[in-house]
Image 1 (spheres, one colour):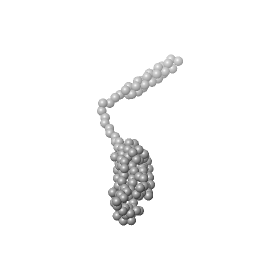
Image 2: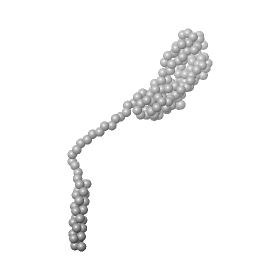
Image 3: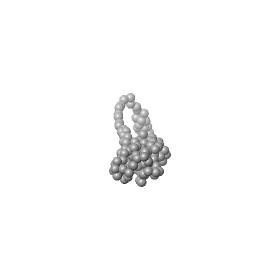
Image 4: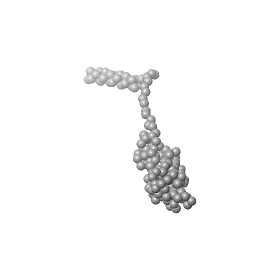
Length: 158
């Protein structure tokens, strides 16, 4: 029995020494060392403004027609669009001579004030401060040259 007590005492002492060494190791610290890592930031790509309304049958005496749409955002992250501005770009075709000044856009700046997520056909514009396009009627001038013309509307994002 005496030998068993000695063996147990030695075994217990060994466990205490090993545990104390482990505890001492757990509290060791260092005063040196370096390291580095990287993190990439995405880039903002311009959004494409889409007109989703169909404008047709413009002519003398026809009421102005609404312009509205959505966006294609092919960037890495959502972007904030404050405004969309519509302007007459060019006029093509028609039965004769027709110019951009035969058309008018009223309320050309549409307030958006929203984040546009990544994707195609996302977000919207023309729901507040709705731009409208109309044919400018000039009774003093024959405007038959504009019959069948196509108006290109240019959009810019602010």
